[in-house]
Length: 256
Image (tube, rainbow, N blue to C red; front, side, top):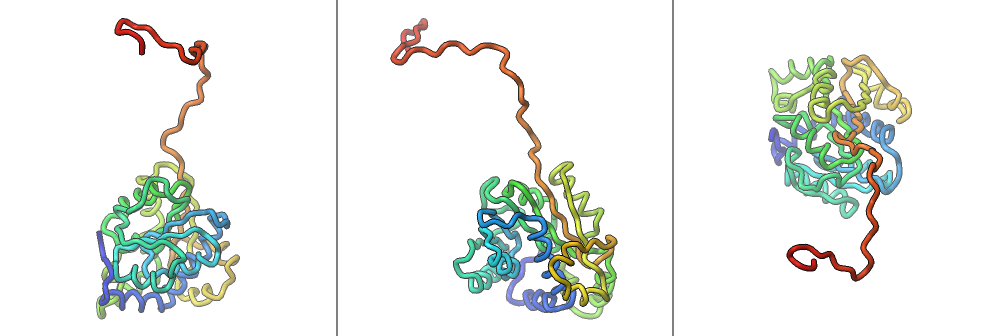
C-alpha cells in the first residue's frame, strides 16, 4: 500500500509542492495532459492519488468529466473542500480502485507511484478502469535533483525518505509488464538548475520539451490496446430460414 498521507506527513508533502521541483512537476503534468488528451467535455478522466486536488482544479477549467480517488481520507476531505461538486471524489487505494472496468477514458497517475510498494498492481488497475489512455508522471531517479535530495534526507526528514523514484528504463519495463507491447510516448522535464526557467515557459514550450532521460521529471502517455481481438471470419454456412411466428418445435419430449 505504501505511504498514506495523514495530518503529520502531509506537512512534508506540502513543503515539497512549494519547492522548485514540486512547482515544476505540477506545471509539467499540466502541460502533458492537454498534449496527450483530446479536449472535449465528454472525456472522462480519473485522477488516481489525487491528493488535495491540484491537478483536478486545473483540469476542471478544461471541461473534462472528472473523478478523483486517494488512499488518504484526510486528503480527500481537503480536495472536496477545494473542488465542491465539480467532480466525484472517493477514498480508495490505487491497487484496488472502487470503480468498474472501462469506466473512464483515461487514468492519471501523477506522482502517485512514488508512494506505493508495488507500482505494477497500480498500473494494472489503472488499465482496468481506463479504456484509452494512462498518463504517468514520476520523479526521475537518475536526475541531479534526486541525487541532491537523497543527500539532504541524510541530515533532515524530507519527503524523499518515504518515497521511491524511477528511471526511464524501469518505467518502460513496468509499463510493458502491465499492458504488454503498447504505444508509449514519453517526455522529460529539464533538471536542476534549469527547473526555475522551465516553470516560466509557455504550455506549448513545455509540451515540446524532450530532454535527455536524466531530467527531474518523467512523463509517459500509454495508449491502451485490447489484449484479445475478435477475428473477422466469413460465415461459411448458410443460415436456416427462421420459423414462422407462432410455430412450435417438436422433439421427443414434446413441443418446446
